[in-house]
Length: 368
Ligand SMILES: *Cc1c(COP(=O)(O)O)cnc(C)c1O
Image 1 (cartoon, rainbow, N blue to C red):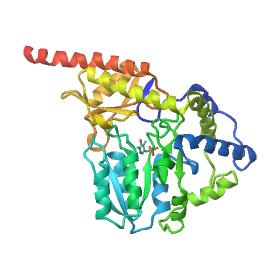
Image 2 (tube, protein in one colour):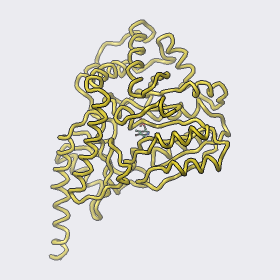
Image 3 (cartoon, rainbow, N blue to C red):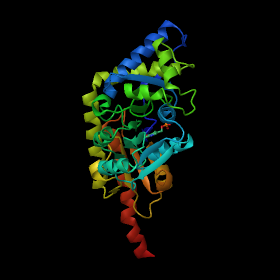
Image 4 (cartoon, protein in one colour):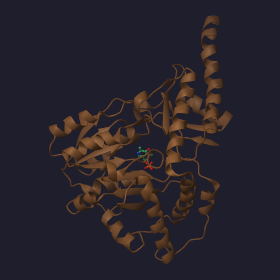
């Protein structure tokens, strides 16, 4: 199967083999070494010297951790939403009692950093800004550095969902002044789902002293306390740690600059290939994502049927639209273990399937 969804992504066979290793004592010295090693290897991807907590959870748990560890019920937050996952971040904050001012951007576009600045001046009590770096539902990458500059100047914390970007697109947690940065194992890391990573700035740690939202499993201060002893508060997904440890061999062999280059090249290749087929790209070309490409389906083409044909006839699995965009688009994941030939196979399949339809529709119309 050519799994071309924006997570879970394919894993190298060696990473999958690591999943079958025998269990170890999660309160013993082997795990302490493993936890320390994984944490250390995460830091270059985050571009940080700050702490990184590894949680046994999907990415959404990390989003919940970011909110509940830094805020109190009634706190005002600015939620920047450019799609489905931006909405999720806002919804989590609202569920825990924050007052969420939503800056909602039309699907396909990126957030405007100047508008973020205006909204922060309009709502001076905002404690934190929630932002999605790479919106997986629309295939748009926000200009995180520009947004961070504006937020930094205004003062609130910046909580960043970098779940589908970190490890594939460059992010500089320390240089850009990001407070909490989140990612998850099944996106660009080439590891199965189940681990989430949370980079925590010193400022974020200090804010946690006063944060009153309820939390237990995702209490980051408890995670840190245990991490100093080489442990996690509850039983970690040991097999996924084994897999992550092996994935770093691959990531570091290629090197971060090479990984970012490859994603940029494949992003461009995907977009130009789709345009050459006469298809309409959904995302604003100035902010098109290099990890996921969205394409609007021509009228008369059923998303469900096309997904089924690609899967059954070609062994290619892509995603459809999410939320209000369901039924209208294809979302193509090209993050983690992906090469140009994986995309060529998809483009060739689309040429056959959509090319046929576009030629045959007017002819059929003429005949009837
Ligand atoms: C995948 C994804 C999530 C959700 O992560 P889960 O691991 O499914 O909980 C959140 N935000 C973005 C941008 C994502 O791509």
